[in-house]
Length: 321
Image (cartoon, rainbow, N blue to C red; front, side, top):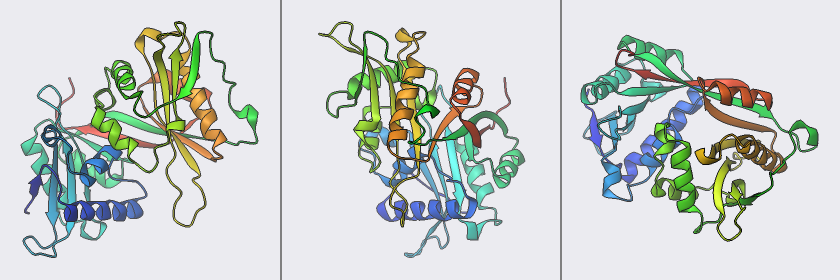
């Protein structure tokens, strides 16, 4: 099996990967690629350094021919020597059972020993593929959900902002650097979120779903002349599906609190402020992702009415310590 490796995708191959992802989603009922992988596959890197941390592995149905289509794809992020590479892979539903997944996985593990792979939805085929190479689960990412009803005002806690703090919306062109700094501190132990760059932020601000009014900031205004960002809740509402007049579900995209402000109830405040915003948008459901071993966060979300509806599992090639 021939596997082509690129640091960035030309437009035609990018379109092929997006089409492949849609076909797999329709067939499996779960998206095979994360948001970051989709962004990387859709765009040429804005900076040369960005290309060095991402690789794209492609398998074609008719290699070398002008009309060749991508039928197998893997996205690999290799951030540096101190962190293992992470990957996602997908095979076209009509070309499964031909060893393409095994071939892509073998290429990944031979090139990036110790790589870790995400199995979105932890489907049976993904489990079999990972376990066949001696990979084992090392992380669970839960998807949780709760209904929201704008008519039921009592379904969510009241917003009680402590004295000395204010809530406002994100302002494009003003708040980027402050948010990046707080986000980095809040997620210092979280590989993906903690290393968000200005380019990553700008990428998401360019998406059709971005709404600064749903990007809510908690500011310390005890010193009116020098307010400080203390926490935030970035909500997400995808555009309505074709044939629908409005979206039905929103997302708790990212909630964070500066470690300097921990223990003051701002995590709960940030969460409730965002949920209230999504409720006011007229949605019927709110979803979120949380690490399964984050007992405190899971407990908080359960108290707010969230229940687990799905799971993504990360598999590692190396033995656990």
